[in-house]
Length: 484
Image 1 (cartoon, rainbow, N blue to C red):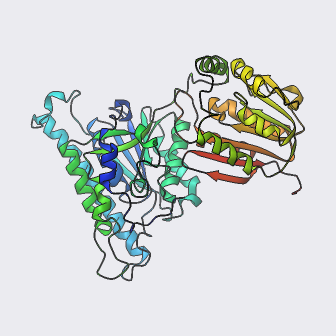
Image 2 (tube, rainbow, N blue to C red; image 1 turned 180 degrees about the vertical axis):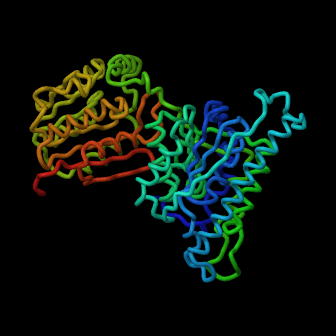
Image 3 (cartoon, helix red, strand yellow; image 1 turned 90 degrees about the vertical axis):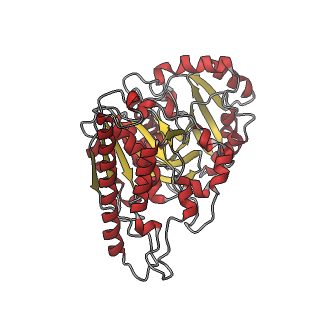
């Protein structure tokens, strides 16, 4: 988790502008639900919706779709040192502000629709379908501010209820790498729901703009921009102004300072809102184990090292983290799922008595064979997992590695792979998972979902966790062993 304070100066908005934040491509039209659709927006605290997505709410209502807002907490912990307001006072005030904002956004959308109906709007010619605002409603989940991570079941249930019956749904939530624990938990819950429902996912950064720097990671360059017409920009400004307890001091006393400073609000005065967009997966016919051989043979024929395993510092460092994370110095028998061209395989082999390395691509395995020619303890197997799990590795393993391969399976295939791992590992054995945390286009799953499914299927203790902005590494331990 990133360490920062709202009092930090942070990254000036000018630096984001100079880096090209205003030149991001436009948000795809399908990211905004059309008439009959539904946007489910999850806000960790009152004001998240106004800071990151008031324009999105307006655009969705204008398209005739409904908006359901889930408010997780009352934001009662916003001023922990306040000498004049208790958490109960803040909860009451902030919920009143939030209710006013919801009413204002709905009213603004209705007025905009009336203007189009009467021909008063400047863009009447481009109105398309008959005007009419969708409905805006909101539900308060009443979770404790700062402790959403302890109440994910309630959050998941709230999302499921909000999505029930929706055929054309998009979920919007705070960015799952925003640096604030509540924001990230909301983002992760939204991702889980989007994957389960086959819905598109929009993530809006809030505190990220403060603590991150444009050159720190290039991932933001793949995000999308939703332009705000003048009426939507005005509605957003009114919504932000209504959160008086956050934009103005509660009093002149120390501890009652404004939480959202003018400098911070500059990020949200842009003529556009910025989103990380993950399209809905085609759950009917996604890529999976059955297409892996064809897809990856073609990929490896086009490029000998498609993920730059040999030249990328990111890949080199990730391998070092992987090896350093192993709880044991040596393992007897191991299996690596998705060994690719054998770069990680070579390092793992040094720690194992016998290693079976499996991949669906015969082209990749030919390159791995050349790289591992002097490794007598490595057996290379071409197979499509989970069904092709080698018969002689179905039990007696001490280590199973599933690194950067879990999201190339369908959910049911991944669950089967996890069950195979459970059956194969000895008591005290380890299941290592390591996956990229950014969108994986063309496949049903992403890294977060892979790890969530592994934990769900096995119910094993997670003995090692290493999370970075770009990847997550976890090691799960088969119960029943003795600690070294």
